[in-house]
Amino acid sequence: MAIPEHVVRFWRALDALVALVRPTSWGAVVTDPRSPVIWDTNYARVDRAVPVGVDEVERDLLPALHDAGATVEHVLTFHHEIHASLLAELSGRGHRIGWDLVLDLPGPPAVIGAAAVEELEPGEELWSRFTASLALFGVDPPEAVAQLLALELDVLAPGGKRWFGVRGERGQIAALGALLVLDGVGYVDNVATFPQARGRGYATSITAEIASQARLAGAGRTILLADPDDGPVVRMYERLGFRRVGLLASTRGPLP
Image 1 (cartoon, rainbow, N blue to C red):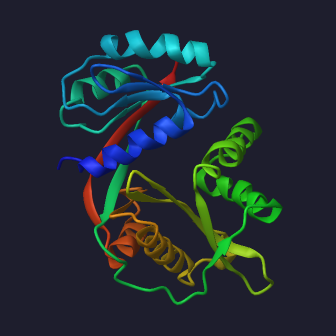
Image 2 (image 1 turned 180 degrees about the vertical axis):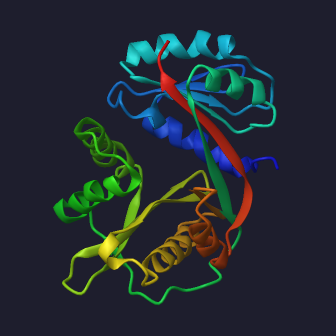
Image 3 (image 1 turned 45 degrees about the vertical axis):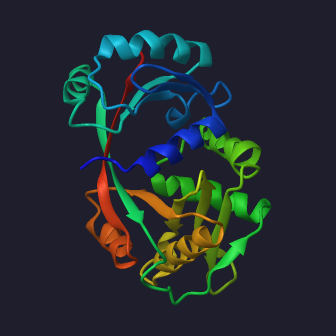
């Protein structure tokens, strides 16, 4: 299943917003010396459906990663079926292969959540809960947390990223998620519910609100990424009307 063009279009726009992009014959090298330990801003984006080998990718990628001070070699392909040998060679070096399921919503959400969702104002409360939520995604090194927060404050918030949340009984932010609209495409990001508030439909309510807000902001489509092995979460998104449109494959490993 080919990744839809609007997904690639959003991804390119996001890279252009947050990092330095060097086009190549197979896609682009993306680097950001402000956040060298964040692999999502220092990587090879293989977004063209052309055969390419590791040597060709690394000829462009490795010098840029070293210049940026990056600590991880990260390669992302939108065409895993074409780049199977590329993935296999990197895996043979000890790179970890990861998969993201791309979900696409062509219209309004099919379900409106029951919980009261509010737009969260940028400030100490939001950024405190955002940094706390990173641990739910396995992000805990202090350097990585600091660089992700700086990216939010200095780049993504000025670029139009908006946050939404549900409050718990004591008024604290119990769940949150974000919306970024670029080039006519809405992206649902950072949806997280803190453990003590799970099982109440907060993620459903937040995602539905974000999808509605994306359309109000002019997005013709709304997309998100999910773990393909997390059945309950994927089914929750599908109940909202999202449909599976493909898989992204990525590798992460030490720099040669």
